[in-house]
Length: 246
Ligand code: SAH
Image 1 (cartoon, protein in one colour):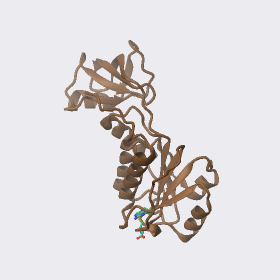
Image 2: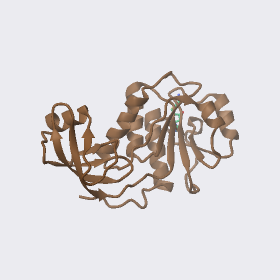
Image 3: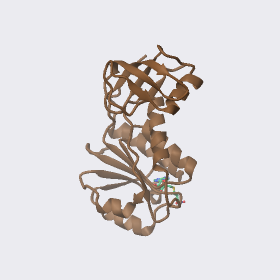
Image 4: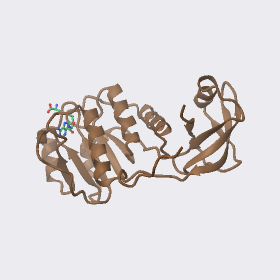
């Protein structure tokens, strides 16, 4: 069994006990059969991973005592995922996988063919936290609330390039050979794909690079995973990843 890792939204310092949520206390005691004195790992998204001793554990709530930092903070490369939400379970999947694949920020957008009118930002954020807990990450990508793609592009900082997955390019020979360094975002459309108006706008933006994701049309969730993996491999932190510990 892997070690227990919990995200605790609280500053971490040796000897300064931090509270557990009711859900975490329940998970530790009832699911993981832990008790006072046991050691777990905690992280808060900013200060790396810490060894922490369970100081108190009840049905509701509890406390852990951070002992020492075990690993330094490791932030992902500056890559955002901008995607059009789809059905609930698949949207959850996209957020989970984006957190695992090292997205630094996750921005759901409403596009011309997006079916979703609202999202549960808190739920999606919780999925990102869970993914970080499970994949050994010390960073949790913030998940934004749903916003319109048009408005997002209106306020876009031209210094951040966009890798735009366009299904109209299915099968086109576009490679990722030379991606300039610097901040990027991956942009994935909804099940209904891009509208011609969106294509026109995106094609006209100088910081947008259209890409094909191969000879088959992928579902939006697959496309998000594939594009993030491509970027990480070509320009991200896959090349200089540390060997996993323990
Ligand atoms: N309904 C559309 C497909 C949408 S797929 C159609 O049948 O044409 C959902 C999103 O995944 C697309 O908007 C695009 O961002 C991405 N995507 C899927 N397959 C792709 C491919 N082969 N190349 C580039 N992008 C792709």
